[in-house]
Amino acid sequence: MKRNILYLLLIIFFAGAVSFVVVKYTNKKDSESKVEYSLLPRAGNNNKEEWAFAKNYTDSLMERIALRPDDSKSKIALANAYIIESRISGNMAYYDKAAMKTVESILSKQPDHADALMLKSLVQLSQHHFAEGLETASKVVNLKPNTSFGYGLLVDANIEMGDYTAAVEAAEKMIIIRPDMRSYSRISYLREIHGDYNGAISAMKLAVAAGVPAEESTEWCRTQLGRLYEQVGKVAEARYQYQLSLAARPDYSNALAGLGRLSAHEKKYDSAVYYFNQAAVFTNDLDIKQNLSTSLQHNGEAQKATQLRKDIISEMNKNTNSADDPELGHYSDKELAIVYLENNDNEKALQHAMAEYNRRPQNIEVNETMAQVYYKRNEVEKALPFLKTALSTNSKKPGLLALAALIYLKTGNTETANQILSETMARRPVLPQQMLAEINEVYKISDK
Image (tube, rainbow, N blue to C red; front, side, top):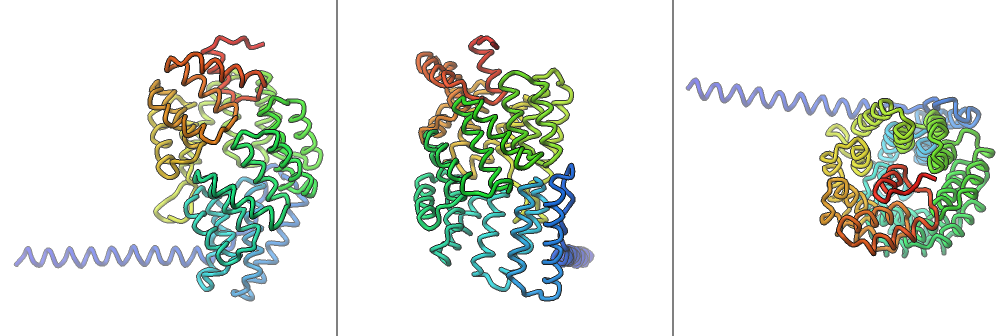
């Protein structure tokens, strides 16, 4: 009898606890749905006039929405403004959440609202939820089959999922509908993926020409053009693009980071540290911080480099998915794997690389990361199948080819290794700093 009473009390307690959690969670979601996401001040007072204009614009949109909660047109404009600010500031965790909450408020009442679905897919891709982004983009194209933007989302999502044939098909449809900066830049990337650097550079030049100078999207394309020049060893041309970008948009982080990469390539590590530091002032971009940590390491500032890598890992983990917000949060496993490799934590690097691989096993960059991890673990036989997939599109990315040479060398295929490395280094590309250091160590190449 006492046991039955005890069981009954436990059941009542458990039911009450569950009810409390559900009510608390519901209240939390209701509270969050009423939050207004004002524009945050940009780091380093980046483009103050542009920010002030954007702030006034978003504030006016929020006022309109407060008066007319069903004003989907204003909500679309607001979500789009959040996405643009996310690109400029690097505060993705904040603005992606703001944009997603805004579009979901539309989709909760109009689930087939094509413009809201477009922006939802864009946020999903930004958060590296690529499979979900692909599914949402497919809905967009079904609803609006003549939308260039929708096909652009399909290009991006299929690339990330490793379906390069589908990405090419979507890009062809996109550029037929609207040959503009967005379509030219995607054509450029697809050509790069397939090893056609001349074609990639030509398409990116068209993208830059189609844009408005000084706008962030235009300068992003210009700095991508600079990176393409880096890949083929045209350092002077790359530097010129970064300088043009800074002339048009002072303190543009991508251009400053480009100058940092060129300084590291020239072994001017103090200059590299300066440029990456400057770039990090104006945006919360973890890739830039990672480059900074590597430059600090090469500049003899190992303690600062180690601390910065710990900070990067902490921030990536903080912004990842959580039980509280399963649809938001950033999948950063590929990036975490690379940072852990630089921190000589090969076990965690493998753990995160495998997590990313399980999500998208056909993506060539993910397979490159897997190959890199196994190479660092001195398990080169395990690296080979991943390397084969990474090379499957005929990519000529110098970092990938250098990794291939190192792996083939360790597996005893010296002739292939030397041929790949000779052809790659003949172009004198700007290689990732860690990769160049590894090549110099293995092949005893002079620093001159």
